[in-house]
Image: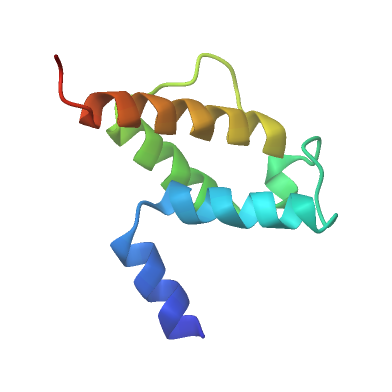
Length: 89
């Protein structure tokens, strides 16, 4: 189990796995979009996530404090990454 989790973190961008996990936890009722991000992620995860998003060229203009705010940011990141991958006509 631990090896699979580690392999996933190394082979896919960190934010993708996190987004899937948070959405699943919201659907199960374990979290809400108003849940404080600091109660879901430890400081190392927050730093890793912040660095990964900054590496993709995104800098949030407001602090991300809740799960819902993070999910909104990740949707925006995915949207922009998808637009960059499409060939230009």
